[in-house]
Length: 223
Image (cartoon, rainbow, N blue to C red; front, top):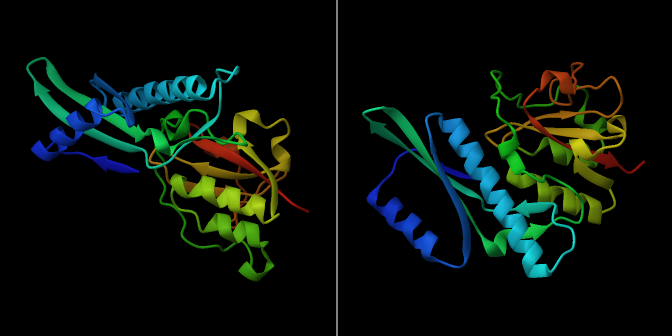
């Protein structure tokens, strides 16, 4: 995921080229709050992506689950007489839009509107890494959201996990290990399954209540 805070002539040319190309879907908004502008643009893009793939594949279900890879974001600050405004521009190549066989994220990282004030823990202290399942070790290696879908697909193909879904779709969340990510598309925590969860990175008790405003994906390990 690419975020550019400065608007240059080259960037303007790139944006105009993307707008004219039929290879891309894009969305843009202008608002006084940069986070709201970016979140709104991302939401608009996801809706357009859903509509495009439903029409392309002639699907009956209009509320499909998508995976968008190589999603790019730009924003610029505009100083106006009535106050500063922020223009957000997001785009994705049509060839980078995929239907998910499992529900991962319908609205992508943009559903997360709160930032974490804590630094991401960088190592596992919960227990010796030799005691952890291989699937958990691979999840702990994830740092960015874009790494999640291919990792989960590989784990499922290798038979290490049986299922993965976005948190809102879980009928019994206690059966799933949770991947928590924030608005910046950073993987913030890996929480164990069960009603009393442990943060695999810190080794301390933790739970979804501590991650309000974040997004989560549930992963069911093969026993």
